Image (cartoon, rainbow, N blue to C red; front, top):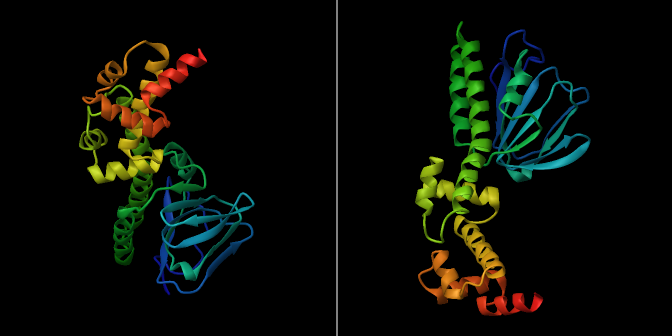
Length: 273
C-alpha cells in the first residue's frame, strides 16, 4: 500500500485566516487492506476526497452510503468522519484538507455544496495533484499561493464537469425538441457542447440514461402520437412532417416505440373518442 502526505503526518487540523488555504493533501494507492477513518468530532477544516478506483462506505448524515469510483465526497468542518475503503476493491483515492474564511462560500458559488458529487473519471485530477506535490517539495514563499490556486482550479473544473455538461445537454435536448428525425447528427450536437462526439454521447447517456438517437426517437414518436390524436393527418403526411422519407420506415419505428402500428394506434384512438 502506498501512502503520500504532502505536508507530512503532523496534525494539520486548523482553520486558516486566509481567503482559502490548503492544509494538507495526499493519496492512498495500491491498496490491499482496508483503510478505516473515524473522527467522532470531525475536523476543523473541509476535506475533499476523490475516489479514482474501488469503493468505500461513508457515513453521510447518519446513514452509511457506498460510494463508487468516479465520485467526489466533501466532508464539512466538525462533521463526524466515518468511512472505510475496502482493500478487495483495489481502491485508490486522493484527498485535500482545506480551510479559509471563504471556503464555504466558494463551494456554494461553484454549486459544490452537498456531500456527494458524481463526476465520472477526472482525467485532470492526478495531473494537477502531481503539480501540487512538486511545488510542495520545492517549498518556497510562493508555495501556499500556488497550492491555493490549484485547489481553486480543481474545484472549478469539478463544477464544470458536473454542471456545464448538464447545461450543454439541456441545449441539445431543447434543439432536439424542435427538429425532425435526421436534421442533426451527434457530431453537430457535440460541437454545440464543445466536446468530442464520443464524449458527448457518454455525457448525454449519463444524464438522460438514453443514447442521443434513442432519446430523439422517443421525442419524435411523441410528436407523432400528438399529431394522430389532435389532427386528421394521414400516416404518410405525419411521417413527412417529422422528417421521415419513407412512411414504411416511420411505421416500423412507431411500432417499435409504442407497440402498435400507426394504423392500429389511430383506430384505437378513434374508438376511445
